[in-house]
Amino acid sequence: MSKDKIWLSSPHMGGNEQIYVNKAFEENWVAPLGPNVNGFEEDIREYLFSSPLAGGREGAEGASVAALSSGTAALHLALIMLGVKAGDEVICQSMTFAASANPIVYLGATPVFIDSEKDTLNLCPEQLERAIKDRIAKGKKPKAIIAVHLYGTPYKVDDVHKVASEYEIPVIEDAAEALGSTYKEQKCGTFGDLAILSFNGNKIITTSGGGALITGTQKQKEKAVFLATQARDAAPHYQHSEIGYNYRLSNISAGIGRGQMEVIDERVGARRKMHQFYVDLFAGIRGVKVYSEPNSNYFSNHWLSVIEVDKNATGGITREDLRLHLEQENIESRPLWKPMHMQPVFAEAPFYGTGIAEALFQNGLCLPSGSNLTDKERSRIKARILSCFSK
Ligand SMILES: *Cc1c(COP(=O)(O)O)cnc(C)c1O
Image (tube, rainbow, N blue to C red):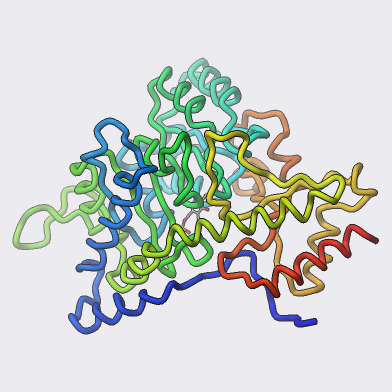
């Protein structure tokens, strides 16, 4: 049996990326601006707001996209644009990648972490409301809410946004993992007051590294680009009345992104097929739950397929047994994100929850989900999983 590494999620080029990159070289647009940056922004905007499954949300005509150097940079700018300052509090889903929470600390603000609910693994609307009430009672109303569509599955958009609007707190939608997912046929990345995407190497499409900020208005986009290009005032010399950043996306990277946007729907289709592969495979294995959309309002890109292992029903086989069993065959799998409130660096941060994220971290596993996995690789994965549970 081949022992070549099977990755959790690896880059998958469509073929035309190099044409865009070569064009950038031919025209000497080797800079953090140029035709690929503008074209990539327009590709994303079209995809999110103009396709049949897009927003149709009110005011979507003004919606704009700023291509940035990373999803983390996009979150940092989103927080700045919402006026978050030192000493403020910002609510954030606990079960997520650290990049969702780190920019809060860049600004000297404090993250307040919220548990997951069990249907989507995302922000629990009840704990969210409990936290907001308690923070207000303690004297500080949270400045913003960061809600994440983890592993591509939309969070409970209606419920979360209902609480947010009741308390008039803006939502930053972290759609880093959810390009191509929809909720009630509206694309993820179009729900928040601001939203972010990531094009890191392991995401559903990649620019090798990159991100985007989705804004409701053209004016907000201009502000984001201003901040991302060192906040230069309109003057012939270099003049600054605000602190700026170097966060714009390179025209070379954007060229990769243009090629990737040509194949986004195929990539979503392939990830969803991987998820169905696991649904079929685990149908015959007791004690393993494959996470799927809770109902037909949700459409996940299934960036990563997620299972939960109940050792009481598997005859004692744990998540970690399976992970190690796969690793011995050079097949990568990974526990779910370790919740932020369990991270040493966030030990002091407030947390509102009932242990759901903790249990998911204990028993959950992400399985190889790449859109470029071959039938041969699927056979290897299947054989190895079956052999773990037939012991
Ligand atoms: C990847 C990711 C980010 C950060 O994106 P980068 O482009 O890697 O900076 C933020 N949030 C979530 C949930 C992510 O998965």
